[in-house]
Length: 358
Image (cartoon, rainbow, N blue to C red; front, side):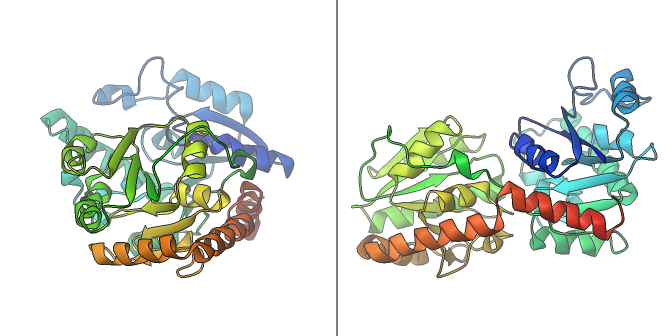
């Protein structure tokens, strides 16, 4: 069986690990960047470029002759696939990958770009997205939170959860970063306001925990909106972007507790990374977060807008080192059992077999 995997490799840079595991199981995979079919940049607002079929797309189809096409976003490439007879599988990794009117999030507030051309671009992409979902053969969301949204809007489509995985060999203790202790580390971007604004709970937390250092590694357009507020506190430290996976590994090796302070999230890869690094975890209980860890066993889950909940659980872990260590070990076992790419590849093949696609 030949599987063509077309993704945005800048966003989904771990896709080759998934493909490698599929090859071990006898599936021939070709991984491409879904924008490589265009001579220059993606069509963007130049809608005339969306008419017709790029020669590079046709060449890939003729040369590789895929039995199935797997993509993780629904726009230009997917709109070409649904014009062919090849089954399309859509791997949905976030709520931003769904048509916006399917989501409870007000996506008009999630962008700092408000130009007229950008609004037109968003509108056009939403129409394409709906058509791609309607014409797809199989939809694979990465958590049950997304599955529920998709089933509510596509009741007649085949929808199955397929978690994203992790490669264990990338995650081991590594020295190189020196932080002040005790400390809590956050590793998250600031691209979506619905996610980022939950970090504005930090001032209330830091006021009551002046002896604890809080480190944020990450960047994004909304960083400028919250960083001036957070940097008023002496126990807050911003590290900017870290090189992946080396500096991220050093960061996770050094922190005492890993925190995910977010307003919305699906299946955060950082929770898997923290698990393999045997770190105790505290996370906001939103979206699909509870599917990546087990409350009171591999993590502590805190409801949204609850700074006191964070203060209480941070205190528990920092005061009880054995609890911190036990939680880290439990997280390591949980991730190893459920989220390694080999397991995800097996689950993917079982889904295809159940649908008689292979």
